[in-house]
Length: 508
Ligand code: ADP
Image 1 (cartoon, rainbow, N blue to C red):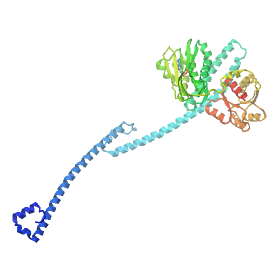
Image 2 (image 1 turned 60 degrees about the horizontal axis):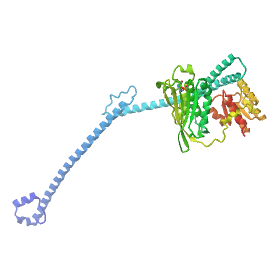
Image 3 (image 1 turned 45 degrees about the horizontal axis):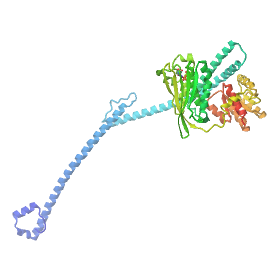
C-alpha cells in the first residue's frame, strides 16, 4: 500500500489471507486505510491510558508523603504547644494534664482562658501600681507636712540653745546645754536624712550644674570634721592629685553630702587612728575628667557578711551601733542613691577590726576658672559688723521664731522690722525701704508665696529670702517661681542665714 504504514497486526492478516492483487483495488485500499486508522488510534489511546495511570500513582505517592510529613510536623507542634502550656503558670482550677494533641479546639479554649486570666492579672497589677504611686505621693506629702511641723519648734530649740550658750552660766548648766545641743543636732540630722531619703526615693532629686573647686570642697569637709576627729584622737589627712582640675562642673552640694557622709562615718567609727581622704585624677578627655574619691580609716571595720547590708535603709552593721555611735542607718543609702544619679557606684573594702575604705569614681565636666571666690570666701563676711545698718523686714507669724530670729539679727546690728503675715508685709514694703526681706512661707491671712508675688508686681529689685520649714524641692522651686531670690531652711543655721543676708545686702 502506497506510503501508508500498516499496523503490524493488519499487515500480518493481509499477508496471511490476501494476495498482493487485492491491495491495488482502490475501494479495498480505502477500506484497509480506515481499518488501519482504527487500529492505530486504539493503540495510541491504550498507550496514553497506561501512561496516565502510571503518572497518577507517582503523584499520589508524592502527595501522600508530603501529607504524612505535614501531619507529623503538626503533631510535633501541638505537642510542643502543650509542653509550653504545661510550663506556664496556670490559673487555679485549670488542669493541663487533660490537654489532648488531637483536640485542637480544647487547646484553643484553654489558651483563651489563659489569655483572659493574664489580662485580668495585668489590670490588677496596673491598679496596684497606681495605688502604690498614690501611697508614695501621700507619703511624701505627709513627710513634707510633718517636717514643717517638727522643724518649726525645732527651730526655736536650736536657736535658743545656741543663744543660751553664749551667755554666762554655771558649769552644770553649760553641760546640760551641750547635751541639749547634741540631741537637737541629732534630731536635725535625722529629719533631714528622712526627708532627703524620701525625696530621692520619689525621684525628686535632680543634680545641679555649678562650677566649683573640688579640692576646696574636700578641704572644707576636712575642716568641718576636724573638731570631732580631734575629740576622738583621730587625724584627717588629705591626698589630692595635682592633676585634678581647679574647677569642675557638678552638684557641689550633693557631692559634698556624699563625701561628708563617708568622712563623718570614718571619724565616728575610728578612735586614735587616721582617716585618709584621697582625690585622684584617673583620666582627662574631651573636656571631662574622671576622678576617684576614697575615704579610708583605721577604725573598727565592717565584717564581710555585713558589707552588703549596710547599704540597705535603716540598717547598721551592729545592733549596738545606735547606742554607741548614734545614727539612723540612712547615710550610706543616701550616698549610694546619690551616686547612682552620677552613674557611679559606691565600693567598699574592709575587714572587721582593720578599718574600712569606701571609694567611687566620678566623671565631671571641667569648668573654666571661677570668676570670684566669694561663695567660699564668705567667711570674711562673718565679721560681726558687716550687717550693721542693713534694713531687714522679717515676715514671720510664729512668736518664738520671731524671738529667735530677732535675737540673732539684733546681735548682727541690723535695722529690723517685723510683719506677722504676708499682707502686713506687703503693706510695710509699700511704705518702707528694705535691703532684704526674710519671708516665712506658711502664715495666716496671706502666705509667703502670695506676698512675694504681690511684692514682685511692684518691685523687682528687693531681695526676698524664703525661710522655709519644709525642705522639699517642690517648695523651694515654688519659692523661685514666685520670684524669691533664695531660701534658708529652718531650723536655720545662723552662719547660713548670716551669709545669705550678707550676700544680698552687699552685692552691687
Ligand atoms: P549611720 O552611720 O547613720 O548608722 P550609715 O548608713 O552611714 O548609717 O552607715 C550604716 C552602718 O554602716 C553604720 O551604722 C556602721 O555599722 C557601718 N559603717 C559605715 N561606715 C563605717 C566605717 N567607716 N567603719 C565601720 N563601720 C561603718
